Length: 588
Image 1 (spheres, rainbow, N blue to C red):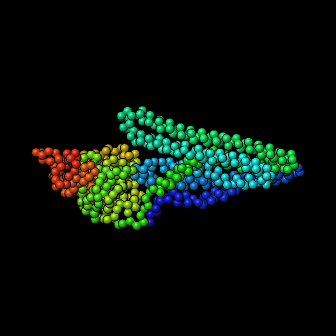
Image 2 (cartoon, helix red, strand yellow):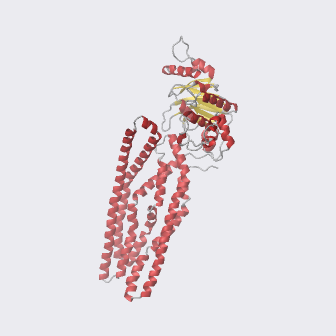
Image 3 (cartoon, one colour):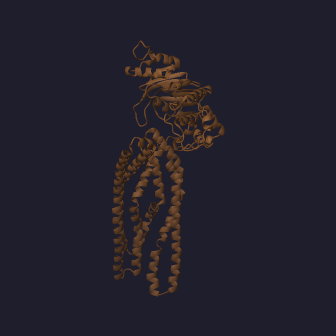
């Protein structure tokens, strides 16, 4: 059964628990082995020098060399493990993050594309020195305790310096939070603007908008740079202060140790060892302050990842069977993503298998909105849309894609071959299914006429194809594997006469095999294979029924003023002429 996407981020992190345990274990070895230098100095000053024993010095030096080799090995291993944890998280969350981005785009939720950058931020942080510093922090009490063992005065001196550094770390946390949030926000704005400019490069160039778009980008960049400088200034200032405090404390430890030596309360070896211990004890705090900015960024990024992935709906555990009887709309109202104000209201009708419906009406009447809702792209505010009694969200995404074919008004193809685009990049695609879809769309001869036929690379967004070719290949994609419901939004906007004939044949083919086809149309050629018509105006149904009957009632006799005719056409006065014109255009 499909696994729920809820808490995907937490599940991915939990799967790396054993790796984090290994890092913690190696960190324990590293921090214990960090005592090697202090113990070596203590032994040299207190044992080797007074006895002038060369064999003792050689033995100690060999032991220390072995311990330092082990120290380097364990430190190297924990860094490699953390790097691979970052890669593993990216591998496990890459797909869910992309689906979350698509879902956020469809819902109109802000900042969807930020999730990809957030995943990169988390991986980069795990591959750096920040995580190892966090694993070293719990070992600070060990060094402090050893200083107390050497002498209480040394221990309290270390505690005093450590308290100052902890206060600096807390200040870094508080002061860096807002600049880091602003930095992430402006970074997302910059990336979105670059993507929008790249996507609309032809229009920007042709309309002479390059300088103006660059000006907009510069203003966003200025805000991004200001946030970056603010965060960097806080980190560098407090980092510099922490470094100064650490140097002062190290000298203070030497001073206190010297005072103890002069009063015969400690040896010279204790003085040197305490200085080294204090340096090691406070190094993680200083590194944490210097690494606070990426840590804050990674923590905020992880929070957005958890929230973004948790917003995705869970996949149903048991899906209904493939629909084959009817589609029912029960007084549905639809609003654009992110809005609660419906632009389509109280639409209700039923289509049986084998029927074809044309949706016509003036511009901005809600036709494309209704089409997007019927394929599950836009949410239904009120009412219900059902296939054989089941709502669309009862099928998992891939199964829903197999029963729904959709040709959007704005054709979008992907870099790849013609066959891959027709098959929706299905890894289990078959040649027969691709050929059948192309034939059903009347695009087979067009495709085999391309340089490499079905294996022709089409470039990014289908750039090597004409508008009509892209539309016919997208129609074949909508018909791939014979979906039960086929929704075509302006399917002939770029077609010539041959393309219109192929579209009519494709519509007839869907109906003949027992499917339901819905066409949003302005051009009359799209209605040739249709038996039912729905007229929309201002988001409301004005007429619904057999094509000839609805179009006849909607037309205005030349002797009468332009106003709606018939009981089905009881719309507002201002929409009447528009409806009549749309009906007349559709009838041709």
